[in-house]
Each structure stands twice: as C-alpha cells, then as structure tokens.
Length: 533
Image 1: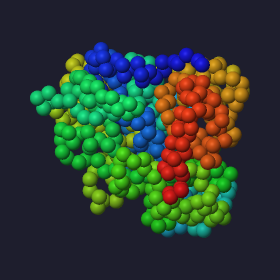
Image 2: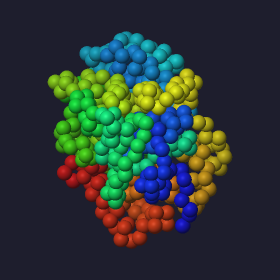
Image 3: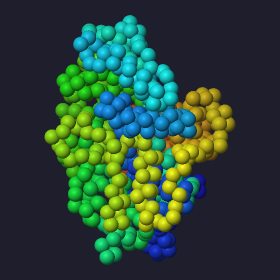
Image 4: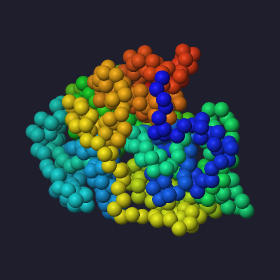
C-alpha cells in the first residue's frame, strides 16, 4: 500500500490533537461547502490559524447539488440587481482564466418563440449589457434554420430563432476540493465527518465550539477567537443559539441526468416551461445531458438528503417533451437525479421562490459570524465579507487585496502530463492543480484510461482514496468523482476495480467493503435515482 499523502488533513491524527488540546485556534469555520472552503482559504492566506469542520462530507450539501453553472445571473439584470451581476461576471471571468479545465465556457441558446417576451430586440439589449459588464462580446442571434441545425429534433412550432450568449459550467464538488486544496497548502486545516454540536459561551459571548466525531461519537471542546457559521441552509440552526430570528428560506432545485445518446446537445438550451413559464435548462455535463432546475420550498427535514419528487420529475420531463417531442423520453431513460437545497435569504413563503433575491447576508451575533445565501460564482467575495465581519475579534489583519488571485498558478502545463489529448490534460490540471502530474505518474497504464464514455479514470479514484479524506464509498462515487451519477446503475460495473483500490489505499477488508457497498446502494437508490425507487 502507498503511504498516505497530506493533501488533506489526517482525520485520526487531528482528532488526537484536538483531544489533547494542543492547538490554539484563531477561527473555527463550521461547514465544508464552497463558502466555508472559501473562508478557510482567505483566512489561511492571511495568517489566521483556522480549522474547518464539516458534519458530513465536504460539499455533501448544496455545493455538490447545484446546477453546475458559474454564471453572472442573467435574470438578475431583469430584476435590477446590476451589482450582483457585475460582481458575478467579474469573478466568472477570473475563474475562467485561472482554472481552465475546471471552469469552462459554454454556449447558451435562449429560444425565441412567437408572442413570447422578451423578444429578439429586448433580449439583445439585455445581452449587450451582460457582455459589457463581463468585458467580452460574444452574443448574437441565430435564425430558426440555424437553431434547428444546432439542435436536432427541436420543436419548430412558433420558433423564431434563438439568442446566443456564453456562461460557464463546472463540477461544483471538485471546485470545493480545489479551494480546500489551496487552503490547506496555505496552512488551513479542513476535516470532514466532524459535527459542531453546540457553541461555547463565556459571559454571553461565543468563545468556541463543541465538536463530535461522527465516526465514533466522541466529543471535544475547542476554544477560539472567532466562530464562523457557513452551514448554508442549516445556518439558522446554529445561529439560533445566540439569535432566535429565522432568516433562511430553503428552496429545493432538482435535476435529471440523461444519456447523451438519448438527448444529444453540445450547448445549453434555455426554454420557458410550458406550465409556469419558468426558465429551464437542458445542457451537456460530464458526457451526459442534464435537465433542470425546479424551484420549490423545501419543507422536509434538512438532515435528510433531499430527493426529487414525482411532481418535479414530471415537471422536468414535460419541459423536455415540449422542446424535443420526437425523442419521446420517459423516466426509464433517466440515469440518475440530484436535488439540492438553496439557502435563500427571505422568509416570505407567499413570494414566488423564483423571484427571491440571491444575495448573501452576513450577521454578527455575540461573537458568532453567520454567512448564508449568495451564489457559487461569488464565493470569494462572500468569504471576504465573512472575514471582515470576524476582524474585530481576530485583531489587526489584512482583509482585501484587490489583485488577489482566486487560485494560485499550478506551475505545470498540459504538455508536461504527456497525454495525447491536450483538453483532457487541461481538465486534470484544472481539477487537481499541481498534483495532476503525480496523479498520473503514480497510476498504472490501465488506470490512466478513460472509464467507458466518461472523462474520468481510475487513477482519479486511487488519488482521491489516497489523498482526499475519503471516508465512505459515496464520498468517492458521488463527490470526488461523479461516476455514480453519470454511469448506469450508479457505476455498478466499476465495483470490482473500486473494491481493489479501497482495499489498497483505505485498508478496507471484505466485510467493510460489503457494508460500504450496501450503504452506497441505499443512498444512490433513494436519493440519486427515481422517487420511490
């Protein structure tokens, strides 16, 4: 077996350190999604001794279940929120420059139909402003014939054409891991499957946390100067220990994953749903076609993984059928599904969920900083706001560097990976940074080959098991990679190879593998497949 790397924190060693009380922490960050990861990175790069704890796996909540789009938010312009759009577009362009292969530009076609608002002229003005704010110019009009050529089988009834523009697509869970990689290399500490049970208070002020190791139920108390609550949809729960108000409105968005062969698209296609006129996207992702999203109040238990409902399934299939009636797609064609809960700031359930603002908010209550809401795209700016709020308890620190890069340059180029497919090499660098070369050189020839029709390889599975704090099989299949979502039956065909990797890298014996396989199958069947499966 290979020696475990220190790319991520050694959980057992850290737990022993925490039990011994050997470390004095400046900051404890609660929540291992994109916002928590961003805060850890910003803190570590400013010399703050910071610990991030996540009760489940990194990115296991909203940050692995988004619509995979790093975008400016075109609809926010129509709502008059120019600042949010400008900030988002600025961050989008920076991410494109800094992590190509993880953040990739994608074309979007917004279909225009007879009698539909906005029409070509108004939408053209909107896109002109969108491009101007981004500092680019790539929007244009496609006529009906061009759209039909671009999307075979598209419903041509009432179709006038489409407006074209670009945004970007990503793997949101891998984005979290790249940020955590940068954060830990800067001195931050991140650990999964450790839950903050409660806050510690001294004379009414928050002075630390009680942490439970969810793998063995042991607890420790950690004292620190500042606690940052970055738990997203769960933010009210921890904040309510010091402030009773409710500010988070959890909204569920669900998606379908279809084989590309069943619904081939090379660019994203946007349509207004025939029932409620909400925009729905059909777009390519990881060799599949994704349809999403819904936007509903999520009233279920937040501690249960969200799942698509029968109503949402029917709603999304209806959108596909309206746009591509010749394909006759049904639930039997679906590879997988995913549902995520968005932490939107707002508690008025009478308001249409789709009209709620997507701004973030930061609250400071008796030493507890809580941050929630916002967009995947602006995670760095949100993190900076959280650091600013914590500054008064942290002392004199530098908060903002106007030219601060989001990701450090990896120091290697695609040609150095000795891979014939330059695009695939760039993808690996985007996803793993400077470790991409080691990932490939340590793998066998067979493990370097793409898995079936995907852009993943078993070398990534081995790297993740060895270096990325994999505790359960679902961590590996659903977040470190997306093989469980993009292969038939949750990736069953790979299990013999994955079992061998887990035995070699994680010391899993046959009995532990059996338990993990049973756990994974249950999670996939009930949370990532069809409702009621």
